[in-house]
Length: 111
Length: 113
Image 1 (cartoon, each protein chain N blue to C red):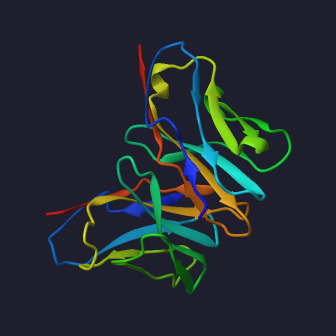
Image 2 (spheres, rainbow over the protein chains, first blue to last red):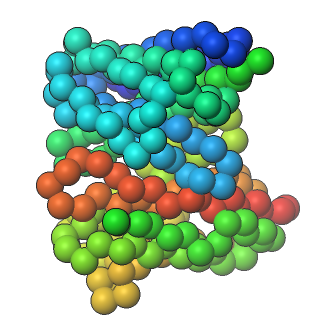
């Protein structure tokens, strides 16, 4: 069953802690993306990776970091430098034509 | 900077009413256009897409969209909505050679039985 998995579904973090969100895909896509979704703001791009061992900042990269050591995996770390991390985070991968497929999301809450 | 504008943030309809959600983009070159839907508690999923050819594209669940290049628009339509169409709808544009999508802010649709 092909698709994108994200874990955990819900995540609670204390202020000052770093947390890492997992994203795995078995669609054999080269490109992967991380978005943040806030009510009334649509999806905003955090980071993207066009190929293994390479990634670029999106529109709101401050306070986040990523790695792309394997084609299937694109984890996102929310660092303590992110001032307003409570949000819904979506991971996606893209076909060569640009059609993006999304995971179920991780809802992060900072306590 | 490229942008995508969705004119309606909230739409409330009764079942069997017709639906049209507006989407305008700012990029003047070749574009690929998408509508995504997010049902309550579910994944964001592709509703329909336009790459080239016939500007009237048909998607899943009876939805269609028309690409009007001169108006930089890609409006989503459905002749008769159902309660199960209650969801949030996002328009997205891919432009140039970059494999990035620019999303609109979304339109939240509520359909009352």
